[in-house]
Length: 225
Image (cartoon, rainbow, N blue to C red):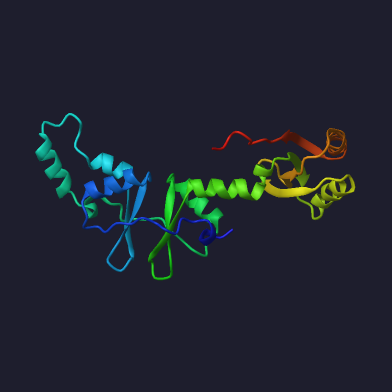
């Protein structure tokens, strides 16, 4: 899953010579929380967030009158308050890498740059959520099965063969490795919904023959607008 296929391509940017008021208006009008800062050639030079603007804004307890306040805000330039150290990803990076950067640095999004460091997009935690829901197939419902399996080669084949032999149609397979469980992995398989009797049979068979962690049916109907 490449960043290029999931990023927002029509990214809103601003130049460092613009006022903080302009940046605040762009954030509010477009309901976003960060703006990449680019020079006249589109090269990324910084980033500004709604938090940066709040921290640079005068306190609500200020004694300035309205005219003085607006003058002050119009004089503060983006270059004076923007973050110059910017975490970025390229269009050829994976979404997983972008997610790690965001998680490790506790940020909600990163600009996407090309080989010349020009800003060509932005990817956010919302985009990562979209990837997760897409690859799992949750919008198509079904049943998700959690299993603890050995790391030995072919350990998953037995589960897949069992599902195939009993009419289970696989929608997605995800794997995670648990540090505290050496030589083990957790596997999460989503299968299409079927009649209750068939599902009960499959569930019982998985429980009898494998280390079944859980079995749950997802339904997201009514949860989206």
